[in-house]
Length: 239
Image 1: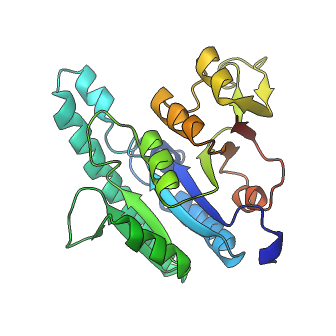
Image 2: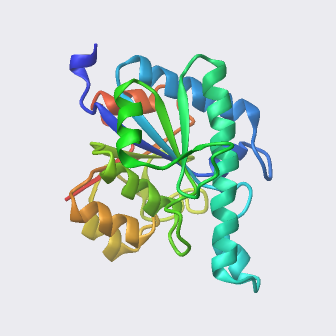
């Protein structure tokens, strides 16, 4: 089965909001268990997988800054919130037998390993899932940018952005039912159209090294695995 894989090493980017499910905040354990099962399928197929999880379900730095909080402080709080989500995901994965390591860009050795690129790569080679927590460790950078950065550092072949919609649309499909879905986009089209796939810094970083980004619906069982085998799922963004 492994030889049929199109992507042997992937970076999966999950938004914090995705972990809320139908709740208004926090972590929905059913969603967590569903994502863990999807990740296990991908690992069993032979994919080496890294994860980056946002923190919008707990605290969003930009939102805090917009309410008068110092931006650096707000972003630091957001990065710490990603560690909470990462530990929750690690627990869900290890309860179903997937060996997982959380590596934090902000050192907190009692709960996670410090992020060291070579060590992360070694974990992946041993078949462990690596969850990259605390963003880049710097304020003013989103977890989207962190996801692309970590993908480049570990030589991932693609970034999978798992969302609540089945791809990229020209308008918000929840607000406008006439919104048109794109099967394929270039980095420049995303930037020129102002499509809200991820922040411009993340897109520009991916463009510089021609790192493909695939946006798909994480709610559909098997989508991430299908993407690993090269099936047409969601929207693919390339040069």
